[in-house]
Length: 319
Figure 1: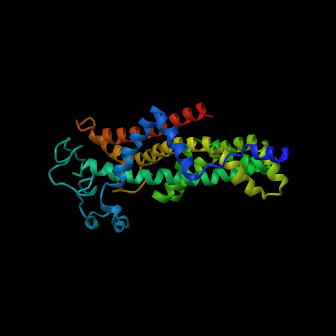
Figure 2: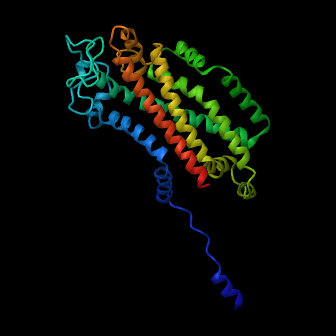
Figure 3: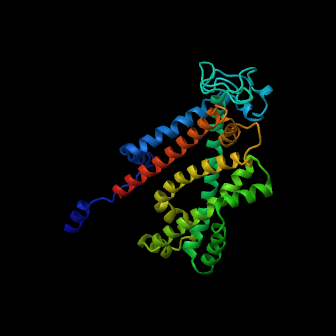
C-alpha cells in the first residue's frame, strides 16, 4: 500500500516544450536584450523595404525579368520608381522631394535602387549562409561523431580551404564560373562552409560525451539519427548566433564582389556596384551614390551583429 501511495506522490516528469513554447522562449530572449532589439530594428527596416519595394509580393511575374525597365510596371509602393527608369535631365542630382536620395549618373532614382538592392542582398546572403550551414553542419557532425579517419580526411580538406584568404577564394571561384547571382551564392557557400564545420565539430565532440548520447547508442539508434536528433538540437544556440554573424559577412562579400565588378551583372542595383559607380563622382561634389549604399551596407551588417551579440549575451545569462 505504501508503495502505491509513494508512486502516486512521485513528481511527474516535466513535459517536453511544444514548438509554440520554444518560439515564445526564443522571442523572450530577444525582447530581454536592448542590444538585440536595436539590431532587430535595423534589420527589420531593410527587410520591410525589400518586401514592399514594389508589387512583386502580390505579382511574382515581375521577378522573372527584373533587369528590363520596359517590362517593369511603376508602382506607388516604397521604392516609388523603377530602379532602371532614367529621368532625363536629372543626372547626378542631390536629395529632393522627388528623389529622396538623389539620382545617379544615368538619372536613376537612388532610393529605388537601394530598395531593390536590399531585395537582392537579403535574398543572396541568407541563401548562401543557409547552404553553407547545410554543408558545414553535415561535415562537422560526421567528423566530430565518427572521429578517426573520417575526422582526419574531412578536417584536412577543410583546413586547406580555410588556408586561402576568403577574398582570394571568392575571386578564384567567380573568375572560373563568371559573375552571376548563382555563382556568388556558390562562392560564399564554399568559403563559409569550412568555418561552420569546425564550429559544429567542436560542439559535437563535447556533446557526444553526454549520458543521453550513450543511452541512444545503447538503444542501437542509427548514427545519423543521433547526430541530427540528439546532438544537433543541443548545439543550435551557438550555430544560430554564428549564422547571424555570417549573414553579415555575406552582405560584405556580396558588396565587395559588386564593387570589384564580379557580382551581379549590370544594370542590377546591388549595393556594391552602386558604390563602385558613385565613387568616381565624389570629388565632383556628388557623394550620394557611394554614401547611401555604404550606409545601407553598414546599417544592415551592424544590425545583424547587434542581433547576434544580444542573443549571445542572453543565452549565456540564462544558460
